[in-house]
Image (cartoon, rainbow, N blue to C red; front, side, top):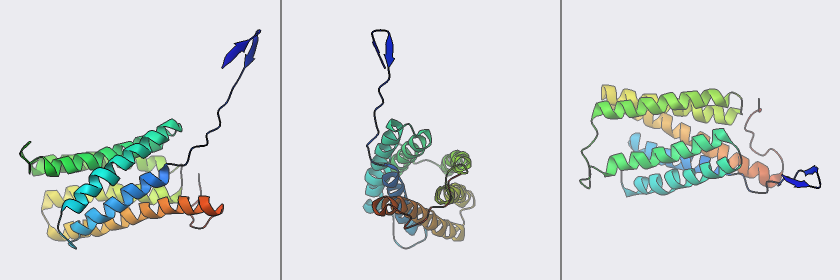
Length: 199
């Protein structure tokens, strides 16, 4: 805003930056699928999942969150930055005890960790009720996933752990769908993959 000879002049800057949401959704979705393939028993936890957690699920989502902040999207900035830092914190919880930086977190600590993330995600799910169906599925299944992870740690039941893994795979693929749908719909300038009505 500028003043010139007593007349107020308004200048607006057009936002020509790309939509960062697909990056955040794909980073979250692909990392979530891979971790939960492990939880479902398909392979062991190794460096591949940890690397995805640091670089794609972690750093890429934080970048997407910062870009959403610059666009004025409080929901996107909060969600992507938070879940990016979730992945980084999860990797730290797994790696720090291995390299002798700290003691391994006990079961009660991990249960509390997952419950807090479940509560946070449930509140964000309420926010998606004003957005679209695809995001409602992503956040609804993610909230359930966090609570199932807590229940798995509470009970120590292997069957519940495997069920949790499959539910996490569904959650991850729903985020992949939502991210790719936005990319394809933008490229083709029409609805190629529907994401549901916007409230």
